[in-house]
Image 1 (tube, each protein chain N blue to C red):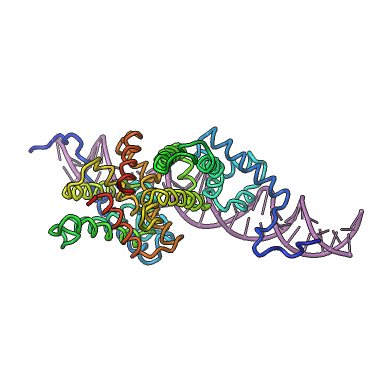
Image 2 (tube, chains in turn orange, blue, purple, cyan):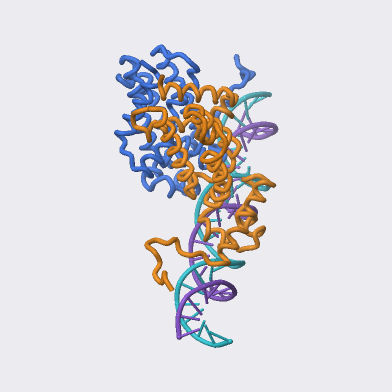
Length: 196
Length: 196
DNA sequence: GGCTAAAACGGACCGCGGTCCGTTTGTATT
DNA sequence: AATACAAACGGACCGCGGTCCGTTTTAGCC
């Protein structure tokens, strides 16, 4: 009979019904988002579809943004996996510069595809926190690999910034710049920053 | 008696009461925002303070975001003026590189100071549209002046992206990076992009 | 100064995000 | 199995952003 005392900050064990509901809610939310589009999905609808009360939604996800962030997170996780252990050039195996460029393109497309969900998620639910820090870490690693020196965390951020949805949307929707040109522009930026 | 017919897309003359009200609303909004902070200001409050009906607010500014954008715009205009015709190094008179660096620092600080208003304004009311295109234009001009070649619109965007509030907030609030370091990092970025 | 069409006004009204709190359910203990 | 306590539940409720539409004001014209 060990573990009478919880370890330092064990994240509090989740009760069975809670787990079941969380899953039901996420599934329902995903289904609704896919069928009617993000901004036609209300919290009450999700609650109904999942067969739970509204209060339960907010208990688990804090806010609408939080819920959307959670939904988004599902696909984000898949994407991260393909970066970490997928096939090259996105995954390991290709030379660093190729990986970096592939990474940028992939992220650019992903952000555009997930656009509506992404801004429904806002910066809540720490989606952006987790996502950003993963991306930043990865870019930092590749830059080091490339022998770049300087303030790597900031350089990584600078490289990633133009891929943020806010910036992309301005360019794609307002200025009607085609995606290919954005990719080319980003490649150029990277080469300038990396040097040589 | 000329101008019986309105010119092509004359912006529709504004009626006297409308003008008076618009001004009253903006003044009221500014006053309230300054005294209680952006997110404690409701549309109804503003309407009351301005002595108009709620409908009038929405008629003129479309949404809460639109109103906030309009308020923000006031100060933005002042800032733009100091870029165009203020004292160097921000204004004209200094060598391009100095101007560029001054521009970045100034914008960085401005974004952080106006943070709450800026994200209350969202991307509505085309605040971000107008602001972005001004900044982009200016940076483009300085880059050309510096003899940079390449896709200038995209390079300008890339340089400006790390100054966007979304990015800054992540760094300042989450990662606790001091502003001076951000400035230094940005300078580094600019030098790499400009080259030489 | 009347008259009229167009524009602006304002407040009742609606829907949704978010909270609150009395009730139910799960789990650990004996 | 019975008990007890914490945690989860759910729906009534609230406030605010946003809309709608009947009423009022303005401005041009005779």
